[in-house]
Length: 308
Image (tube, rainbow, N blue to C red):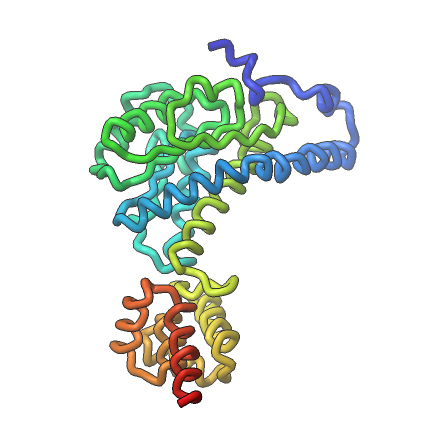
């Protein structure tokens, strides 16, 4: 394929003389180009929503989400996956990032690693894929062999597949259940897809996992009620979440956290239902782990009692 025809490889007519500009003009030019990124992602809202539903369906069946990419795309996948456990209290195996070249590629460029489709398939084989898993390929140009090899292997295994790209010309070469194409236009520096394409990809991945976690009951309002307390910042946040939902003081919020072994959601149920930890966990399980249902049922029950 002639890569010069790909949007991600074309020259940007607005930046052909960027090397002659002042520092402020360079910064302003880059910023103006970046402003188009959010709009490009917004145009893919329906496709992103479809992808979220695919992911949630996989999660509910006990499946995992795998991001597969090379270079910047791979690093963004690993980044998004690594932030899910502390934010939403999920098992690190639930969302995983696979990057061409392995872990060393996270901190040092291993460009040649992306050229072999068989390596992409091999990388996923080691994950022992199941048909309930979801595999999301990420490639700004849309043609990265490593990514295509992984996605094709996933399809052979019966997995649902997604693909995130910024090159509309590549769609005809992609075989996936849902294709997300955020067309951000040519890069400020020709072919430097760590810029607009990378930013668009980050926005898409953020939206995929955040939306999926909301649909899985990991959020109450806009609060991360399954946050994993791993440092002082998150301990403070957990206390404030309990305070915001229940109206209790900080000292009582801390006491509830201690009684719930640091679990925010059960702590809130313990207070709302006036029950111990074991009972709170049972209530949550019966509510499919949705806090709103768990504590809402108490309010409804109280209302019924008051009418008798």
